[in-house]
Amino acid sequence: MKLLLLGCIVAMVLAPLAAKAAEARDMVYIPAGEFTMGTSEAEARRLAKHYGVHPTLFLTESPQRKITLDGFLIDRCPVTNAQYKKFVDATRRRPPRSWGGRDVPKGKADYPVTGVFWQDADAYATWAGLRLPTEAEWEKAARGTDGRAYPWGNDWRDDATRTDDTTSPQARALTTPVGAFPAGASPYGVLDLCGNVAEWTATESQRNNPERKWAWYVVKGAAAAHSQRYNFRCAARNFSAHTSRAHDWVGFRCAKHAPEPVAAKPPTRKPPALPPVPPAEGTRPDLLGKQPIRVLPRKNHAGVLIEVPYLPVGRFSMFVPEGAGARGVPLSWRAKHEGIHWTTKPDGSCQYTCTFPDKATMRVSLVPHADCVDFTIAIRNLTDKPFRGVGTNTCFNVSASPYFFDVERVRSYVWTDDGATCLLEMPIAPRSGEPLHGGWSVAAPGQPAPKGGSRARHPFIGTCSRDGQWIIAQAYGRATSLATNAHYSCLHTRPVWPDIPPGEERAVPGKIYFLRGGPKELLERWQADFGK
Image (cartoon, rainbow, N blue to C red; front, side, top):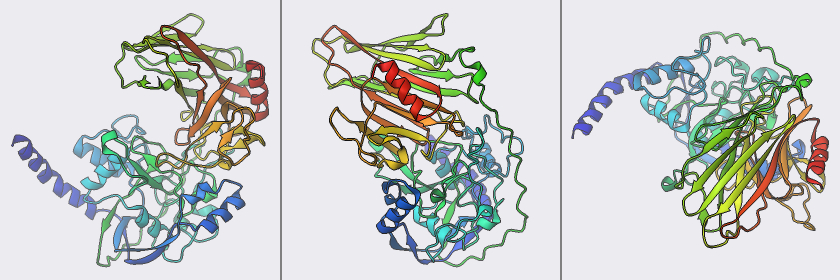
């Protein structure tokens, strides 16, 4: 009863605030009616041929269909830091991690809020007396009823949006004050739909599973972190994500059901001036071999931070392993274990041992070198039965390094029978609701692995730097599969494991490379290191 009374009091206090927040918004009315949503299969294949990518990149938008919607209101611009700050202060909710504290970063009040989880965006909308738009509402607000390609029309306009500056090592997610590109307005006058931040919607991208706490939602629009024009199309849906994702290139806007026409007030303020682009830090190849790579373990965690001194913002993280187990013997980090205990030696190497009672002991070591990190995972079988179907999955995450960050996968590669193959040329067959969460098996000897198929030839996966001068990769001597989650630009490789007899230990070594050069140099180095 006390909790119910407290809830009523909180609701009474917040309701007027929410109503006031909704009234003060600049929202645009989208009239009821029919519009064309999505992309036809024929158009998806035409786009794939035109851009030189696999058709599955666009088939996530199919089928094209006619949708009829009721009238609704939608924010003219994405929710700003200043707007979100009122919500944080009123509810004491956690601030977005992009702020680095509870206050809005200096000079960023009119910038779109980013780094918010779906739950945060949904909670803000509810607090404001609104809701998140559905995917269909967002797309109609963007493309109108004439089926246009971009919010501003069918032809690309450089003055309609900001895209990623691929010539700069660090120009990633350079958001702008909202409304800075009036030429990018949709037919209804909605701004920033493509090119400032991508945006959460209320539409599930696959059926949610509350028991496993699985939930995926469609993310619409491109961001300043993107450069490929096809991602700026109204129909694009390449960045749908799990609710555990929060990125500095994803924000949101709000909507509200409005069956009756509402006159929208045209924006009165002039577009804000674009902020200056900060100078970019370059590479320091002179430090290669002179200052060592550093591996910094996380306390009580299977993750490490890797610092590479000769690369700009050369910070990477590694979860080693992210998951492990044998058939019938899961070694999940959620399972009972005796803790992760790291030790670090004077030479910079580090190691941890973790025991899963009555199951297994896992021992992990990492040894940094001039341009690579060797790592070894060892598993000891503590049961009286052999471990069969042993597997581990190690995540090498590059999202903190703008020099390599590749959310569009235009610089990430696997090797096929046709040589180094961009991941965009490989099929996307996601098992989750994230279209850019893909994986491919490694071909066995004698199995074909052509470009565009479901298999890769060699057991490593890599990403090139923005200027093409460096390449990073995760590699093993033998592997069963390769994978990536483009939201984090993370690289995954699952090695081949032998069976582990009772009471015995087996180990598998791998490498993380930070090499000068490109795919050719990586292949040669892997062949030399693994005797191929």
